[in-house]
Image (cartoon, rainbow, N blue to C red; front, side, top):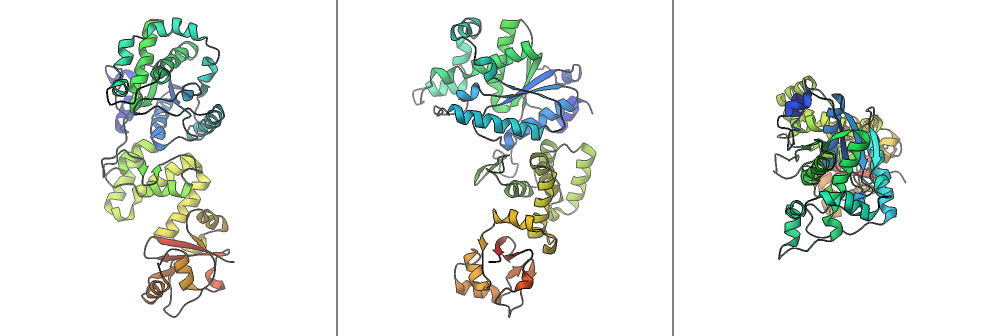
Length: 412
């Protein structure tokens, strides 16, 4: 499969400056992809673009991965209705380190060059920048950017000179990387088209050379029509301190049937024959959610490592798939301590209420009398009212009501 064919098959074809995507098959280029340290973690929207970068790398393209230490000091205003609040230099520094560490995880095993645009902006003289770069940036183009017109409109919030200049700063990144690393293409998210084109224009004006942009499409949840990656709790992050490994895995397990094949193509490195086989088996019995299970495991392995992925896979299959609880270890149960309500004691009525599985003692007793309560996946006998030593595994047990309401009991 050629590069253009794989990009099309995986659903990565979006806006580009190439007249025809097949041009990508004719020349191995050096490209760059950047993330601003506006947070201490990437989201799965960034991950989609990163996975597209991996496709380019696997077809012989060289990658330059940028952490935007300089652009992060301003903040990208595109799509924002109000001025961003500036982050402290200490926060930016911490965020840069976190983003760089995630690059190394997501691109593990791949060759790439890591750069920080603060390294070339910190010594640039302001007058020199205006003379050497600003002179080549037409105001007409910058003012006609949609977000600028909206912010400057009668109902807009206005825009500072700093945010107005953001696209010029990012555009110069492209120029610098063109000069120093031979970069001739920027890979970006769909929302970065305008900023990326600014770089192409600067290279044409300042270097009399051609450069290109290739953007990843916005990934959409086909079931809802909304941007993929948003949950009731907000964004899905790659940092486990912002989205736990358990919740990360469950997000993918709960992916919609309509889009799961697309997500396998975008967010995993599985090849076409493998994904075709998975989808064939999945479509024979969709209730088993085979495709979602493969998706959850592969993406969690990529972001959090194979050991964590296997542990969460076992937990998920135990809690929701009928796998025996006896296979869980103390490490697995400790993972659950951050995800489930944790209670102590032996009286089942008290545990059911304190674990949030019932709103009152009376309701808890009704659940017990109707066989609606399970301990470690086993339905309780009607006469059982307390836990005993045999119910605990490594000092823990899980009580469940129905299919999805769980609480973790920790032996006192």
